Length: 262
Image 1 (cartoon, rainbow, N blue to C red):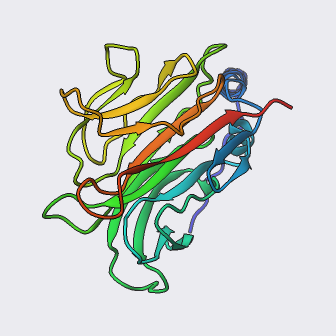
Image 2 (image 1 turned 180 degrees about the horizontal axis):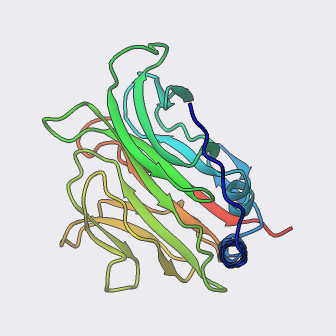
């Protein structure tokens, strides 16, 4: 194949190249500088883990993904990202630490444990950005649809103001209907008519606080989160799991994230 000679750069083109490189470095550095340099500490009922900082992950062009299994029943599940198994034999209520995955769009698939070539129980395409955190929740499917679903939620890691905590709720209880999220003593709900498979936005609240779930636009309490211990500086993801009419009972998984101070 013929190769065409590249003409030498003229002073004007050289100047333009230098300018573009300088602008790229300036704005690239600014974006990099906006990312936290300190790790994220996650605490759950089953243990705690530390994940790399957003800046470290961005330097490696990696996103950070964790998995929560919220499908009731005895079957174990494997979760694959682009054919690589990230979640191995996940039981109900299992929570993994954050794991690094390349940035970009990924095929996320769920299969019965040990059946690596079986048709997926659920299949999701998701864009994951470098230096960002995500939670993939495995949950029951909608009525008339596959038995399982994968929903991926962005974890912004926005540290709440001093003396406050932030809270969001993910609805993974198939038969609970729409729910309102309330804090005792407050008239306005933190979230209204939250649909199954949806997640609320993070809301800042003053700890201590008792959080309740109620059927949408009703006053009776469906579930009181008496064991949820909010403390200042924490970013809490509360995942509603189980069932309202049959076993296993309606309950929650709580993930507390904190930006480590070193």
